[in-house]
Image (cartoon, rainbow, N blue to C red; front, side, top):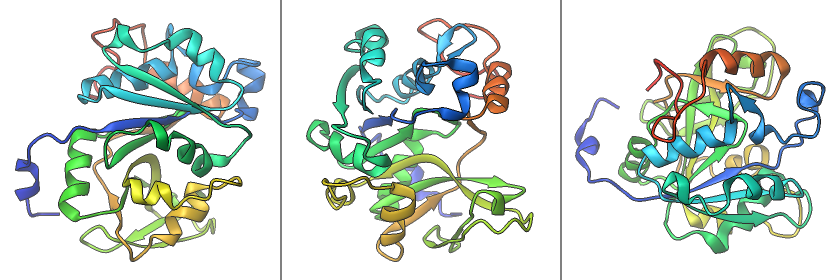
Length: 256
C-alpha cells in the first residue's frame, strides 16, 4: 500500500449499519438484561460512542439492526437528531445472525458501498479513509484488520501485499502472530443482496469466504481494537473511556 494516490480522492459519502443483535450471554452477570450496545461505559451507552464516531466521520445516515432488544435502543436514540444523524431501524423477525441482520437493513440503504460496524466492538479506524481505499482497490468487500500477537486464538486472515484476502485460517492455538478481523467492514450492496433472506447467516463464516478471489480485501489501518463482549474486556473499556463525554466529543482520550 505504498502508492498514496488514492488518499487524494474526494470524500465519499456513506451510510452505516450497526449490528446490535448479540445476546451478550457472557456479560449477563455484569449487565443483566441490558443489551451489549447499551452497556454503560463511563456514563454513556457504548452505542452512543459508535454513533459519535460515525458523526465525526461525516456519516449522517445510520441503520441499527437488532431483534427484540431494538426497542431499548429506539427509546434512547430516537431519530438521532441530537447527534446530527438520521437513524433508522431494521428489526429481525427472528435471530438471523450477522449476515441475516445486515440483509434486513438493505431497504434502508442509500449509498453503495456502506460501512458496517459491530455494536459491541470499538475499532479505532479512519472510516473515511477506509471507504476511499475500498473504492480505489475496486473492492466488493473490505474488512478492517488488526494485528494480534496470538492470531490463532481468533482465527487469522491471510492476504496478499496488495490487500486481497486469500484465506481465513481456523483457530489452531499455536500462538502465532497475524491479522484478525476487527469487526468493521465496507460492503457493496451487491454483496448484501447475495445474502440469503430466509435463514440465519453468518457474515464471517459464510458470506466473506464466498468472496475470496472476487473482490474481498483486508485493510490494515486499525490503530486499536476492543471487543466488550466479556466481563474482562468490558472493564477494560472503562479505562479506554475514562469519563463521560459531551455530544461534541465521543472518543477515548489519546486515540483520535
